[in-house]
Structures are given as structure tokens and as C-alpha cells.
Length: 290
Image 1: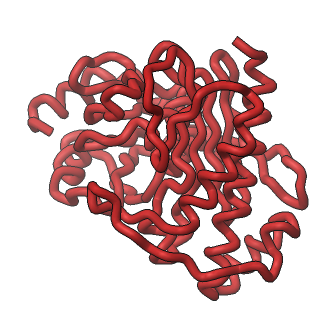
Image 2: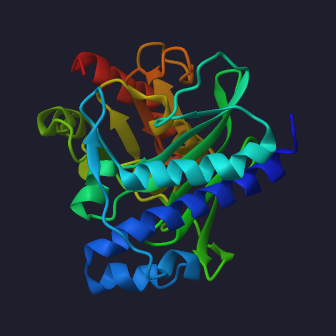
């Protein structure tokens, strides 16, 4: 394998270049002062007057894809090609099996991008033998970038004026009794588990959920249905780099990222502070038939 730290730096560069492309479209929508202020921290290339409208089309699974998705995808491919490692993207599926490959979601949270909520991100992971060995999540609206490599602790930085500025990762000493659920998931299902565990519920979109686990802002995140592998690989690395554990609820093992199936089973991510309750949490999920 090539030097993992060098590949991580390359992935971070690819993520911010994708974010630059996304913000060219996003800024054209004319959002509020908070978003414009966040955008002002981006490099000049992303703040240029070359902002433009975007088209929205539906893929075969009826999920949306925009011009911003495609522009971000192209930026990532252009940056990562120097690694000479194959790339599997939500917008360009890898056509053959590979022991090692990049797994990317150029714009995770497309619906939130369209709606203007700001809860979208760029996800890049490197997969080796079905497992992530590095991950990067970049939030273009805020400039926050989270990165982790196998065996290393997760790092949080702010990308500002072309530089990566280190930030304090943990927002609090101990994670609260809060379980994260997707904004578009089933409220009833999330409520059952939260009640059984005496947890509160927080609803978020995109892989930013994993970042909140890493920041000690939540105790768990559960996905109640199968999902695409590019939605989760980078996030698992970010969470794991703070001691959190992701469990495939079909196998009760770590999930596998297989370019043949392109799917993960439903799963739960448990923050380090709540791993002592892992058996209790899994029992509740089983008894509730979630």
C-alpha cells in the first residue's frame, strides 16, 4: 500500500476541491447571511462570481442528482487519479472487483443541498479488503473537515483561506444519552428505541451524523434500513477514530464494503462512552424487532 498519511492528505485535498465546486452552485441560491458568512471563509476559487444554477434529475432509484453532484464527482476523480487506485463513486460505479479502491460520495445529502439546509457533505474513504482504512468528511458550508486513518485518532480541522486549521474535536467530555436518526426516517421506529434506552432523539441528515458521534454530541446513531456503502465508509472511520463502534445488525460484526453488492445492512454506531451498554442496546433492538 502507498503511504497512508500521503493518501489521507490527497483525500482531504480532493474533498475540499469537491466542496469548492458544490459551493459555486449553492451560493447562487441566495441563502441567508449565516451561509454567506461561512462561504466567505472558502478560497477565492469557490467564492468567485462563477456561481450558477443547477439542474436536478432523478436516478433509476428515484433519488435526485444535481449538476453539483457531477461537478464534485469530477473534481474528486481528477484529484485522486494520481494515486492510481481505482475509484467507486455514487455517480460512477466501479465496473470490476478490486482489493483496494476509493469509495466516494461527492455530495452526501443531495436533498438537503436542494432544500438549502446546509446539512450536506463530501465523503471519501479508502477501502482495503472490504474495510475502510482512511476516511474524510468535509462540510462545505462551514469549512469543517474530519479525517481519520487506521490506527490513528480522528482529527477535526477548519479549511479556511487555503489552509487546514486544527480544531478541538470533542465538544464535551461525555456523550449525552442521545440517539441520532435520519431526518427522513420513521419517527415511530426511532422513538421506540429511544424510549427503551431512555435516550433523547436528534434528527440529522447525511454523514454529518458520524461527525457528531466523533464530537461526543450523541451516544449512538442507528440506520433502520439498508443503505449504500458510500454513505457509511468514511463516517465509520471518523467515528472509529474516537473509539466508537459500528455494528452490522445482520451479522453483529463490523460492516463489509463490497463493490459487488454496494449495500450495507441496517446498523448501529455506538459512541465510546456507551460501549458498556452494547449488549443492552442490541437486546433492545432485537426485542423491538427493529
